[in-house]
Figure 1 (cartoon, one colour):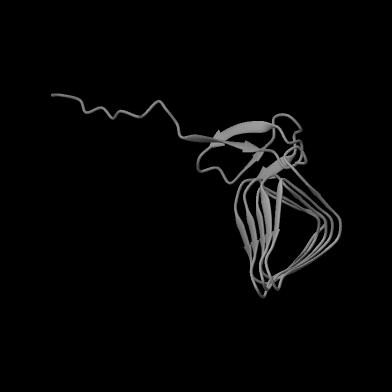
Figure 2 (tube, one colour; figure 1 turned 180 degrees about the vertical axis):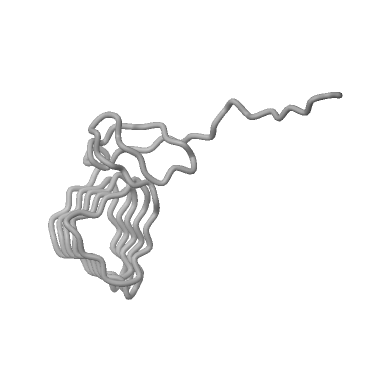
Length: 135
């Protein structure tokens, strides 16, 4: 009798992220939702967040993106890859990518990011540090 064998792929799907705490790159499994950074030992959340209600915390950090919807409010310092503000954000922002404040968005706090866009109707109150070497 022949024995059936199953072959497993030896190559696992991975992606490279930047730790929002230390800024160093880390290779993670494609389906991972959180890891501990091997460089700084901090827990790194890899998920994207869509804030539709009220969110307040000491810090709000993810290696993914954050979208604050029209009825969403965030009161916390934010560390993220990209941020889209359609609602209200109160707190400093450190983004490794872009920060966009839409026509319905309000952002109160200092921003450090390579790119900042404030659409007509949106508001931004704070200091900004924008450029390629800022994140």
